[in-house]
Length: 202
Image 1 (cartoon, rainbow, N blue to C red):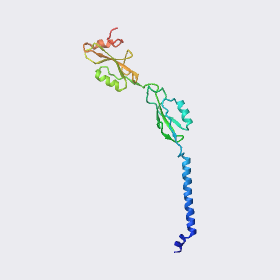
Image 2: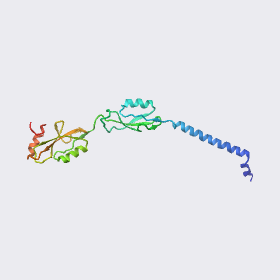
Image 3: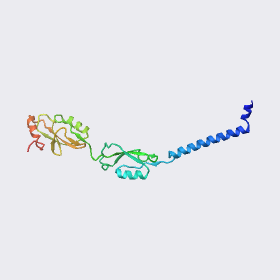
Image 4: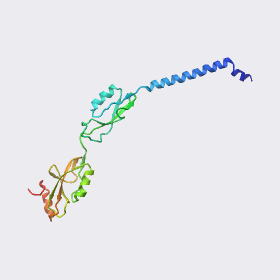
């Protein structure tokens, strides 16, 4: 009973109140420290870095207390300057804390080079989807005498016959020389592959 009476004495209640206040004060100090040390109330809007060079990016982000890191350059967009920013993470308009790292992808200097597949001997219907799926474009279609109609006899780039496996930039325009269905001998076609005229004549 004496212990229970002590719990309700003014001295105990006073000590208890002081202890509660001390705990609350400590908790508030910890929260304020965390808020200050993590810049909880500070946020920076990420700028739009698209089409900027690395030098321009470095200047802008340094002034804003932000950092950047370059990712692999895998894409090419002709609407963007070469070696300029084509993608960024986080996106423009996002809010981040100072010293946050912005990840950048640069525009390539040009399209990647690809090997031209062997479509010689295939039909036009087979050859065109094969070339288009790799990113090449189909240019001029011409015909030369050969018994099989629409069979690919030659592939050309900028007027010159090229061999399968030749490396060209993606989106390069490839011309097709097809059989007209009226000829008869392949030998004559093979000989004509050494000149650049579509009809095999000099």
